[in-house]
Image (cartoon, rainbow, N blue to C red; front, side):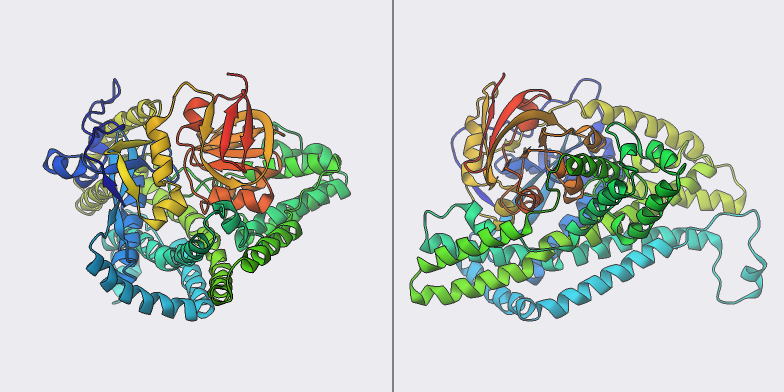
Length: 609
């Protein structure tokens, strides 16, 4: 990903970062390979690591680390072993005080790059030529996997097995079924991540190739204009928001809109709606859209507490409240798709006219390919990160309930304070002592560990991680790191020279426009419902699942992200100014401050410091 300089780094050494007071022993929550270790000091200290606050903005609970290992395994195998992306192999990660830092493994040997290019051209070419057919198969595979994890049975441990276990040849005992169900639960997750990354890198690759052609022929073209040329394309992920807008209109048309007031909980709204015939009709309409659209999550799904809208409908209801207010005020709540399409086509036509005739053909082909594959870059999240993962976390909760029923845990949610291998150990002992009638140690062993880890996570959550650690790189090469995370050579240099006390931040110009507004800093997903009309959302990164609240905000500022990050894509689709990849917005801006967001130049200014 990067070549480091030989001069002193502007970023702290990962081996010099101190443990926050009271957090001693935090390392026990994580796999041994996830830590900076003395055996790897020579290599790791000389590499550039950045905080992956896009996917992991909070300290990681022990069990949730499965959503670090498994995706990076899957990403690496597709990027490095299947498609052989020429300049990049995979991503290494380390955990520092509970937070995930990552770095890319580059390919620098020209001969090796050429060797990999041959694999990539052949294999990626096959996917691009058969994209629609292969993508349809992906959706079929994902829906089957979602059905499997939903229907997977987690057995109870009864006092006596059913008669059928004794009298029928093809039934297994409960001890086997519990352990097999847990193993299959983990394997289903691995399979999901395998499906997740099969197309994603190719979606980015098509866009990156188009971007490189544009920049080679049009050196002054802004990244933002390249991105806008593929904007305005309808994707599955925007349909939940569209359904909520319809519900807001229905509320006004049937006279129940007064129920939807800011600050009310979904339960309070439901209770009042249930008192009238029109309200009950509205609730019936809501039930009609839940499958599949309430399979959205409150965040990116990589933490166990990012529940689906079925489990936590606060974002959906906050969206309806915002839409109702906007419609009453005569504001437009629909996505400006026609305007986006006109601007998309205008830019493409004008830039194409600047190219010579020989280049216009490749320009047309790459633009068409980018528009074809772009929907996957967002749509995969609905199937994988939201629909599957929210069901999967709930399946893990069933194992937590089993352990809690037998006294190994005080609460089912405590299962997430144990690593996945520790859960396997607890289940091993549970079925052993259930089988034999012996006295289990688990009820005395696990609860103190859970209590300590909850305390550690609370304390670690108050620590502010630096945006980067290790060596200051000379250049960033990994295309995924540049496009998705927005970690470019220029951005790293800005982080290194940043004035932490200043009132000006710079980032990637992700979506055009200039606005001023009151900042609302959101770190935890539970704070999303507090966002009010006209505020500027400042956060580590947005999730497409937050799209329904975008009718309330005036602009978006993030710590991390590139022009193809989800925050950038969603903001362009909703016509909101956005600056992403500032590195430190959530640390430097406070809720209530007036800020100016220039999404055309990538500058955020704190007006009242």
